[in-house]
Length: 359
Image 1 (tube, rainbow, N blue to C red):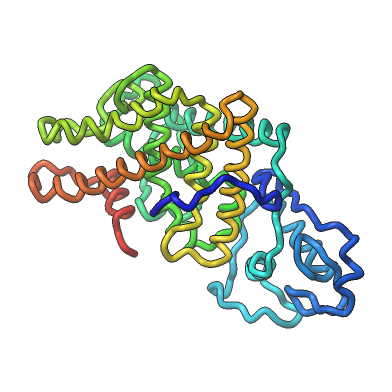
Image 2 (image 1 turned 45 degrees about the horizontal axis):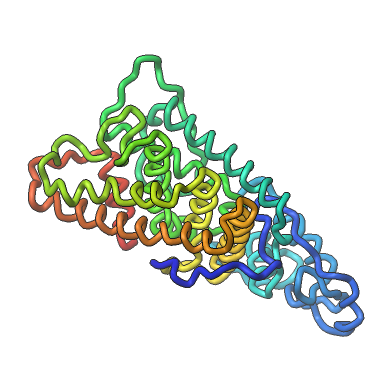
């Protein structure tokens, strides 16, 4: 996985990721397309809306669908024959996307501020869940990545977490944060699964480093200051482990990154359309949202007098995150082979196994 293809956003048609209000194309184009069929359903009563030739019915459907507050899915296993009067909402929406319907308005200064505030609210909820909740009972690693609501239970006063408790809660709070993004409601379960496999650990690495960086620490730690590696690995290639824990924070300190920049970078990481096995419509959705958050990051850089050069500097953090993720995978794959008697199988290790699995 690589973010090398992420270039400076220039298209105004894909933005405002949380507005939920698609932007129709000007009615001035209507006369140019008279007599052409709707690109979505084939109706002859058409106009130019949301960037494509479509009928009023599909235009209104697309507008409502992009504002839905709940996840939608296909009851026919994403294999609908889109014809007749019975139209699957999920497949109809994705047909709209595949024809090129444009979802969002362009990002300007006020919209960038609104996006950042929205991310701050979500991130504060993530922090609260991490610090004040306990691991739900009878939860499996597979269930955690199925876009189902996570019911957090309050942590009793005086409860102390060990490494594995903190690790699982870090995963859970980050997964819950990701599922709050609007685009998650439009992805199929298969797309949600592959997105988490490729983006979740990268995002969790970023927020773990961000928390320690904000606290003035030089290495990644859990909220109580404990090590992000379990006690049983102490003494195992300390230089390698210290690189995992400190390289990203070191670069953050060099750049003096701000909370706003890291929140926007986290959103960009979660909206990665270049993941293996993602559907075409899923890639379209993620690319549109990624471009939107990219535009917001560029706007933020310019507003704070960093200039355009700041934008690629912030994006360069993704290469360190990718390297950190690779090192974690190498370690978690190798250590059980070298020291099998010291490995504790639990929900935390099940999560890592799930993220490393091919299926």
